Image (tube, rainbow, N blue to C red; front, side, top):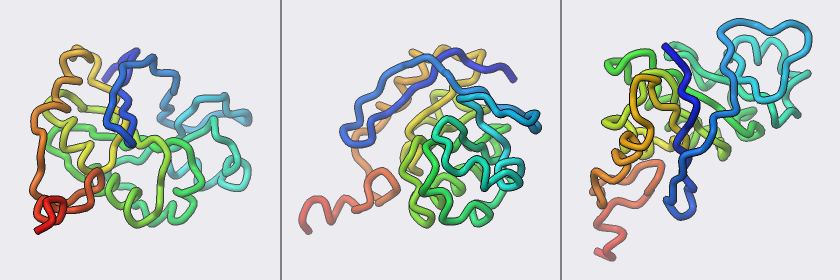
Length: 171
């Protein structure tokens, strides 16, 4: 699984997107004593070093599919970036993690999908609150971004549009 040099980022206030350089490094296991800027740590390591890292906006965390958002709890609202790993297309646990982080734990920073992320998943990820997407290394990031345009309207409410269609239409 390679790292794509660019990510797709959404502005949640207006839905505009751009493709930008990926400056964050996701590490699989612990760092030495000093954690460099723009590092995404595994949830377990971040929890072990919580007191040291909580105030650092240049350090984020990443969730594995079997990590529980409850372990992070209200600290989520104090972080600037959280990534969620999707190791395989058939593993949808990350969708729930993203939604819980946004809706239950008040996370307002960048919520990034990483791993097996490609065009067909982007729109559904956005609906669950994700606003940054690290596309699989073997996929074209420009082509993948078009997946955000697959549908223009939704019946159901979700993290990106809390009101269902009948409420938005006034009926």
